[in-house]
Length: 262
Image (cartoon, rainbow, N blue to C red; front, side):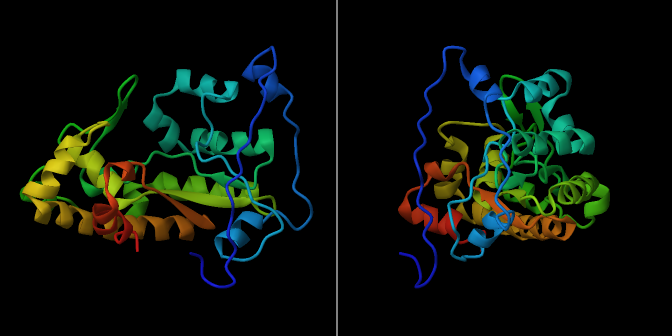
């Protein structure tokens, strides 16, 4: 239940009839909507637990295949180049806001972006998704993880992207940072790539729980620093993405997902 006085934001199901011309016609007809005066920070106020005049809206999937402008960039640049090149990431972050006038802009990024700064390299392979050549499997692998001790040299593009986005969105909407939650990031690192069954991580839960918890401890510390860095760079609120939580039951969810972002 919610604590006394805290707002409860109800999910709203939106049904849209696709016109004969398909989704492209629907997008062309989308109004260039501007929030009412005083509503530019409605998402931020809702995130703080304040009562708000309506449910704020933002697109969790950032820009994507539903936008022709995004598809043009996806054919020109590999995913990591799109998310780590400031001028490209800034443009892709702003596209949904320009098109639909939503209440928040989320930084265009990848959930695995901070991993190389911790000693875990990855690539995004077209048709496969993220691939980690050297998965995290043993206590020695966890011990070899590094702290993010210098954001400017390891993730310098984050400050440029968020700083520019804050200037673009100031007084218009809320700027949202993008952070993967510890369990999802550890699971990616253990599996080595997207795995619908999450087999290696589940095996580690039972066969080597101390290794899994050591990895979660390290990731939670560094991801916490990463989130704080995004706030320092201009983000006004942070969305933690726990994309692989569906692999956990009620008890394991509390032990492996719920407590670590705190």
